[in-house]
Length: 248
Image 1: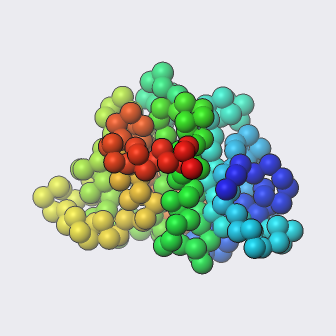
Image 2: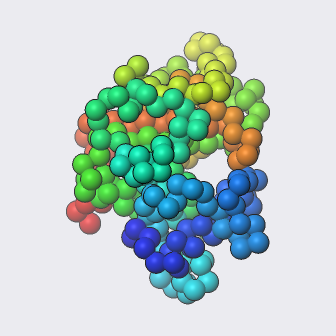
């Protein structure tokens, strides 16, 4: 696991992102290279990409990257003209908090390595990065597949009623899709959690909270929510797991 610096690592990250976000999930974008099978956008030139590597695969094939996390700190976002999430969310509360921010994005794992240790290793890499740069608040958009909000009524409502961020750390969707689709007494938590993607559940286990409203992203065929994690408020159990990335 490392921060991508070589052409092979960068292209490998873009190839994996294409496989997941374009081929698997049906996404698209103005800078997607369909001929080369690379998914990229203008923020990549400013961000760091944490890549998980399979050392048994030739890097010249660009298939050696099996996990990716894009990391964008506030100074990098300033150089890029803003955070990626700002296309969807008003981040004024976060940017006005005085806290040190890190935007997490483009998280994906090769289909053959899901359900194992890959995401745990990526989180360890994120932990090391957070500690190195003294990050206080993590945030970023995470997605439900598809754009049918009615079909996602249970998980969206559960997130809103049970995990809403406090006002001082609460981004708001610019094209606001209410998440409180059903009242709290009608939320069926087991079904809601079953319908919630693994990545979002991972954020929740770390004490993650959601912003106000969802954003329907038709380009990527998703319904997005903005997740926020205040590292000071992590439980001791998860802080210990998270911090292992620095010690390992």
